[in-house]
Amino acid sequence: MSQDSSAAATASNNNVTLTDNVTGKQATFPVRTGTQGPGVIDIRSLYAETGYFTYDPGFIATGSCESKITYIDGDNGILLHRGYPIEQLAENSDFLEVCYLLLYGELPTGEQKVKFDRGITLHTMLHEQMANFYRGFRRDAHPMAIMCGVVGALSAFYHDSTDISDPHQRMVASYRMIAKMPTIAGWAYKYSIGQPFIYPSNKLGFAENFLHMLFATPCEDYEINPVIAKAMDRILILHADHEQNASTSTVRLAGSSGANPFACISAGIASLWGPAHGGANEAVLNMLHEIGDKSNINEYIKKAKDSDDPFRLMGFGHRVYKNFDPRAKIMRETCHSVLNELGIENEPLLELAMELEKIALEDEYFVDRKLYPNVDFYSGIIFQALGIPTSMFTVLFAVARTVGWIAQWNEMIEDPSQKIGRPRQLYTGQPYRDYVPIKTRP
Ligand code: SDX
Image (cartoon, rainbow, N blue to C red):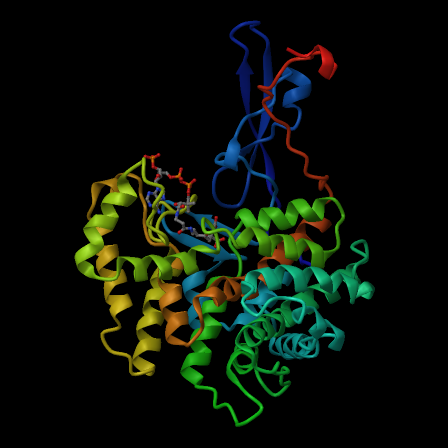
């Protein structure tokens, strides 16, 4: 499905040699270089040649795949989607155009954009029986629990797009996933507040439709504020894809076994839910409410710095960014424009967040560890201003990230070197021992 729009990774004439200091045995491994960023040491023959595995919990220095979709330069705070910087996409593009770019590798022509938008629009409805799934949940179920369940259940309805060996079926499943997530999310929200489900409208754009399904009711016309719709569309762009993060790696690993795309996306949603990942936007709002007032900031900064205290400054830090997350900067600007449009002045949570950011960025603990605000630090303040409940924040992240997950899933399926993901381990458990019958145990 993707067009090869950039140079493939090249095998450089460089290599590295490992020497076992005990046996003196040496093994040499090729270095491969990409179009940008660090090269990689291809260690696929390491175990065969040395009898050793590598050891890298959390994959801090491990490349799991070759990809052409997204590139992050963490030291310089750069994020590119198919080579285009996130700042320019956020300013000039729209979410469905970014979806097209992530899926196909190039920006669409005018004609391709119209066709793609229409193709997504025609897949926004859900099979009517899927509404029954919602009624099995308690009204107070966390919406992310509902998303995991309902998205996984898509496998039970859309059998005609689960054959992953068929490029056409993969494309149909991709369109279905992107198109149906706002509907599934909107219905999860409506179910939680006891309001009737709102069907998608083919007259509306992607972000407008999402707002419509979240906030419209059958009783009166829902007026969409164009500034809010544009802000929502921009927020979706900012969350669309991000290299091999935890949830994307989950989707790739699930997909590597041949699982159907709906099941893989459901796995990605589950991984995103964690507070160390996509769940951080909800955790930031809860943290700001807990801090409550600027006068308490220093107490919480102290807790965040205390290695014996599990408290962390949510929305701060990142595995890759050791500089400002470029998305956080755009999110902060969007926050101001949304609050201005809504006539919200001196929003206490925004004031608190900005003071917290200022103090943290002047504190050597955060400076030494290169901990900066990430995409989640400001997003919750915008969502709350839009009237979205905290429990729905990570759902919005999942709606946006679905295109990244499905684009990376397609790339994995199309990768000729793709194998089932099956990491090894360093075993430190009991050595071989015989079973002891219970009567003879001490
Ligand atoms: C997302 O991977 C992606 O691309 C994710 C994402 C995407 O778009 O997909 O960008 C989205 O998940 C953003 C991150 C959202 N999570 C949070 O905001 C939660 C708070 N952040 C942390 O939990 C943490 O920073 C992580 C999980 C984001 C990154 O953790 P790492 O890379 O494993 O870093 P680490 O835990 O090894 O921390 C290094 C040091 C440690 O101190 P020391 O042991 O060196 O003394 O920094 C400290 C940590 O204690 N530290 C923090 C901190 N984050 C790291 N201390 C206080 N507050 C924090 N937030």
